[in-house]
Image (cartoon, helix red, strand yellow):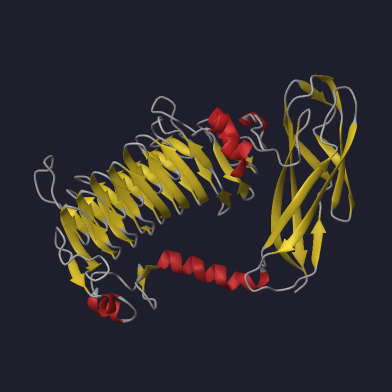
Length: 466
């Protein structure tokens, strides 16, 4: 018996709310499992609990299941998810570990608000690790990113896909600005804005290492880059690459638009276009604020795919054939193929990501993908001072890419954990569960107050015999 997936179902009951609520359920951080310490982090299993991070900006949090965040389109009157730690006066200084789970379908629609992302401002004491945001739709004003608006701390082993749109300047696929460490992370994001727009980071002021961006980047103005818009004086981009198309006006580069800093062991291959100061790797390699030109070392660009024959700085122009396959080792000697990079049938990639892919491939034969659908809760109400019994039912579908047929075994917990409620008293914060086929039956017993918000969690283990 091989475990396929651990599915977290969020149950929200109000006067009339279905099993998977389409609206926001107010959950306090103190209601989460755990105590918010390094030894006992707060546990997050649904999007309402993710929003609860805003209640304690110094605590330690971790995801314990994949999060379906699609209902955030209806949060806050359509403005979507409210960034955690939205300003310099209220920064997130805690730790957020995604445990390699995904947050899918998150929406933020705040075109007049600055520092927009899952985290608005990450303090220099804060950390984000192993967070994967999938199919995000993020819109903000200044400093908008797929995961963090402004990073002053550490973002490690994290990724984002989707779209990021800034109403003005400083937009990045993962971070609007980086004044900390961004390492072993990636963005596959379509990024648009006015000025200072980058595939991974908008304004880059510290360190980007072992990271990449693959999404298209477009801006109406200046400083536009496939990885970072601007790599400032004393900032470093190293062992990183960009493959997305880049379009702007001036200071446009396949990797970096404006570079008064240091770029080492990098490459770019996406199409690059603009009206002036356009380069295959770097658009402009100096700044009016920097006393010396930027440094570009051991870096390359594809002069065919970028449609650029030159680059600012000392980047080397190569053909597609020279950069792909085993030929890359010969023609790109500045990349460390022993410790950091590896060749593929196409362009080189970073070993840290190829190792993760190999691990995923090795696991895939024993890990078919399962999807729950047609989830219904009956009845859909909780009445004050009256115990009610509810049935939760659903269908299970195998969505494996290989089309394999498996016999499923579904294992339910003994209890439904009621993690939060308001204006209503509950006799017990957990309810016994009976199972009939693919249906759960559990009881809720409000004993006083009004019938408002009650939410709970349920983990269902789906297994198959190989």
